[in-house]
Amino acid sequence: MPIRTVLRMGEPKLLQVSSAVDPSKIISPEIQELIQDMTDTMKSLNGAGIAAPQIGVMFRIVIFGFEKSIRYPDALPVPSTVLINPIITPLSLETESGWEGCLSVPGIRGKVDRVKAIRYQGFDQDGNVIDRSVEGFHARVVQHECDHLDGYLFPMRVTDFSQYGFEDVLFKN
Ligand code: NI
Image: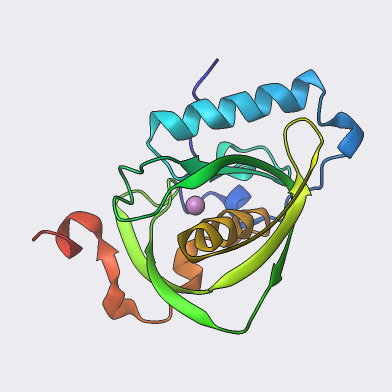
């Protein structure tokens, strides 16, 4: 299965709104191959998640999850998940700040405020309903990935640019 090129910030497609997948088409070869390519691409780059528009396909599909993340060594495990047509509902107004990076913004990290606890719903790769309530890094990853479906990259969410920069400089100690 091919590893695809990840689009980098500056590419106009990353700023576009993606289209919902017809649920009856989830099991089609086109969508199944897309999911496989996203998975292979994410794993090849040790990503915690990836969204379809990052490989230039404008569908509302995100993939995330890891047992142990090389890119986020302090993060608790997140179940490996394919999430199609996601809907996010905040479970409280409470936010927390945390470091993020993105395969489309290589080498850069920044602190981003995200809602601490969310419910997310959608379909998995077999067309089954997903309905989970989560918090912490799991909630952060979902919010970050789903932002891609609406044309938002994490730097657009940064409010404190004293907490933003090149990874190897920020964390040189
Ligand atoms: Ni990203």
